[in-house]
Image (cartoon, rainbow, N blue to C red):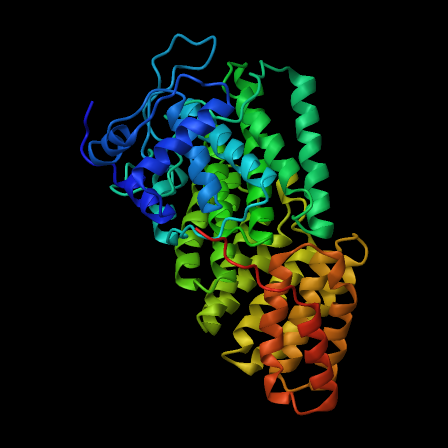
Length: 491
C-alpha cells in the first residue's frame, strides 16, 4: 500500500551513491546468499519503495538493512529505513500487540535487531562514524514524561526513539526460549565480569562479547516470563545496554553509543526502574560533554535528576553521581557558582546514610570515582578560572591514590591526564611533564579512544611551553604514541 515517499529510505539511499538498479541487484545477491533464491527485486520495485513508501515483504527489509549497514559502515536497522511492520505478540501471549513506543515487545524487538546488525558490523570490521548524533533535547523529549512520573510522550519528531515494529532481525540463528532463575542469575553475573573488564582496560576488546550477550537477552525477552523474573531480565538488558553504549563511546562509535544509551533507558523503563534509567541518561550526557556539547548535556542531566526525584528508590549515592555530571557540565560553561553548588550537593549526598543496598550498577561510583569526577569538574572550570586548579590537583591526587587499591588502571589514567592538564593550566610545566610521561608509560595497555582524545586535549594545553626542551621532547613522544587517524571508509 502506498504511504507517500519514504524519506528515511531516500536519505540513506542518497548517501550510498548507488543507482536503483545497483540496489536491486545487491538485494537479490544478498538474498540468494542467505538462501532466499526467490527474490527478484528490480529497479521499478526500488522506485516504489522510495517514491511511494511501499514496504516490501520479508525478508527484503532485513536484507536492505544489511546492505545499507555494510555500505555506510554503521548500524542501520529496518526502522532507520522507514520499513516498519507490526510484530506479532510475544510467544505464549494472546494480547493485542502494543502500540506505544515503550511497549515491552517493541523495545525487545528493536534491541535484538539493533544488536544483531551491530554484530554483523563487528564481523566485517566496519566503524560507525557517519551517523549524526541527536541533540540532547531530543533524547530528553522522548523520555521526559515517564522519567518525571507521567506517561510516555509522543513527540512529533523522534530520531532516537527505538521502535521495534520492523521484521525479525536478519542475524538471528535460533530462537532462545524462556529461562529460569538460575539462568537469569548467570546473566547478572556476566554483567559484573564485563563491567570489571571495562573499568580496568577499556571497552574495545570486549565490546563484541557484550553486544552478543545483549542480543541474547533481547531474544529471551520476546518470551513470556513471571513478572519478577521478567523485571530482572529487563534490568540485565539495561545494564548491558549501558555497558555496550559506554564501550562504544570508549572506542569512538558515538552515534551507536547514543542509541544504546536510549535503549538502556527504555529497558529500565520496562523494569520500572527510574534511577537506572536516569543513570543511562547521565551516560549520554557525559558523552555530550566529551564531544563539547555542554548545553545539551545539561538538558539530559535535568531530565536524569528529575527522574530520580520522581523515583522512590533513588539512593543518595545515585543522586550524588548525577550531581557530579551536572557539575562537569556547568564547569564546561564556565559557571563557577553552579559548579560548586553541584559538587557540594554531591559530597553531602555521598556520605548520607541509607539502609538500602546499593544496586550493582552503582558499585563503581565509590570514593575514588567521586574524587575523579570532582577533579574533572574543577580542571574543566580552571580553563575559565585558574583559581580552580588547586582543587583539581587535590581531587585528582586523591582519586589516583584510591584507584591503586582497586585495580582500575584506565580510570587512574584519566585522573592522571586530568592532573597533568591542571598543572599545564597553572603553568607548572615540570609537574605537568612528569605526570604526562607517567600517562605515556602506561597508555598502551588500554583500548580507549576516549583516552587518546583526552591526551590530545592535554597536549594542546602544553603548546605555550613547547620551546622548553623537556616539553618539546614530551610532545614528540605524544605524537609517536597517538594512533593514526582512521581513514574514512569510501562510499
